[in-house]
Length: 442
Image (cartoon, rainbow, N blue to C red):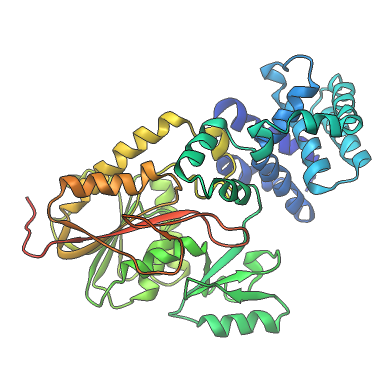
């Protein structure tokens, strides 16, 4: 493999996120294939870490630049941010961070930028204390989030916002969900310990473990055999709350990439059927692949459709359980997807709220009397969570809120809210709704 310059490749990978609003996920994997295995960890740190701290690094850079760089030179701008990220957060030796950033500009065939990058980074080092003092009242610098999100979060959670923002800026843990149809959690932890791989059981998810060291997941025992999946602890709670019973007909709406679908089948292999619906065909392929690796395909039916358009996919047979993992702002998983800080806009919230209520209303007609619907989002904003469920309950007389008795998260008037935890679970929201017995679909 002709290994590229890691920093130049990271800058090129991040440019479309900044200039075109593209998702880092779609850009990162193709770029990673170009990187030698020994450098992949650093490449990931540079891409994800620079976006995770983007607003802080941008605030510093604005104090260093006399005038903004041209859009066509966004790659140079990103090299400056990558250099600052290494100095501040990776503790890369100063001289190495500067020389490597300068060298990367040459690899981008922008030798004119070498002097600029060198000057900016050295200027930061000379005046770091003064610059940091100047920025002590700048929320973008202090918390490294967009102002609109800072305002929303502080207004919604005045006692929790600072902890949420702090957790968002740290690297998340890697959690696994053990496929209990093939293995047990305790046995798998023993297997890992026998290989000197440190892991511990999760606190709230009964099938979950947390890895205590960085390792290539594909090298763990049982990966190809489907003994585990990668899934955060908060997401693992969905199947537990759904509490499927033998012979239930189950719907997983917005199912991709299939982690929760697989967990449903692992927890209750005796369900009658599982219907998985998702709008995007390429994402549904991920569901199919995950079900196949975990050997769970027998009872799953996959449908590519708009789940809100029930005429397009529903056979009119009622479901006993429905999981609606609704499209949302994903503000509870920013630490895993730091590009959300740049891609999400305040105007998205109203659009998402309308879609969430629309999906709830459409799917309610497919739920059997006495059935349970679990509403989930990976959002920490009440406007997408308890306010949506409150509005739905007000318009749906046969819907009842089922309080969740749990030790995780915090109880809300409707549902429970989890915040991202340092070294722990992501941010999530759950509500359980029951359909009155004796009610009939229209």
